[in-house]
Length: 366
Ligand SMILES: *Cc1c(COP(=O)(O)O)cnc(C)c1O
Image (cartoon, rainbow, N blue to C red):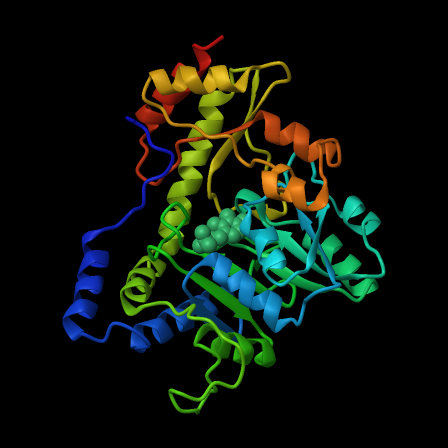
C-alpha cells in the first residue's frame, strides 16, 4: 500500500534512548518506567501514573481495583474498541451497551441514564477517536446514581474537555501506546488516578500481586505480569517530550483532510464540539446513506490507499451475539454509524499533496 492506515513516528533520538537502555542491561523494573510514569502524571495533572504492558491491561486492572465482579453491570458504548467491553467479561461483569451521539460517536448521556438498573455499578466512558465524552453529563449521572467511572482514554491522550486534560475525569483513566496511537511504546499502557488506594492496588497487581516493600516471592493478592519493560518506557519518555508537537501535527493533518473533503457531498468529515480539544487518533469519515462502503474501499485499495470500517459494533461480534443473544436492532445509532464510517490513512508525516491526492481519488469514485 502506498498509503497505510497508520505509521508510527520514531526518530533518531527515540532510537538512541532505547539503545542506551539496552547497553545499560537494566531491561525491566528500572528507572525509565518510573520516569515515564512521572512524565505522564505531570502532563495530565494527576497524583499517580502506573505504567503497564497495554491499554487493555490498564483497563483490566482498573476493573479489578474498583472491585467490580459477578452480578455487577457496567455501562459501556458498543461503538468502541473491543477491549473496553472485554475487560468486563474477564471479571464476569455484565456489559450493558449504550447508544451513541450520531455526530461525535460518543456515548449518549440520555441512553446512558435510561439503562441504569439496580445492578449498575460503573460507567466505562470512552473518548472515541480522541474526542472527549460530555463529561459534565457523565459525571452528573454518575454522582446522581452513585456510580464509579473509568475513562477509557486509550485513544485520547492530550485531549481536553473545557480546558481540563483527559485523565482527570472519573475515578481513573487508561491510556494506550500501541504503534497506531498518538505516541507509542511498542506495546504499552498507563493508568492515571488521584486515588491512592487504586494506585497501590494497580501497582501490586501489575507485578504479580507483590506488596510495596515486600520480598520478590511474597504475593499479597492475585496479580499478573502486566509490567512495562525499560525499552518501552524509554521510547515512551522520548516521545512524550515532543507530544505537543505530535498532537499539533496530527491536528494539522486532520484540518487538511477536512478542507480537501469539503467539496464531496457524500462524505461527512468528523464533527468536533467547540468546548473540547480533540486529540486526533484516526481520521474517520461518514459516508452518505446508500453509498456502498465496500465499493469505496475497493476503489481506494486499487489506488494503493488503505481504509478500514471503524468501529465495528462490539455487541454484534460473534461471541457477544452468542453470549447475550444480540441480533442487531438493539442500538440503532451505533448500528447505522458503524455501517457507514470509514477511517482514512492518518499519520504525522502525511503531506498536503498526499492528502489532496487521497481525497482526489476518493472523490473520483462517484
Ligand atoms: C487501543 C485501545 C485500547 C487498548 O489498547 P491496547 O494497548 O491495544 O491493549 C482500549 N480501548 C480503546 C478505545 C482503544 O482504542
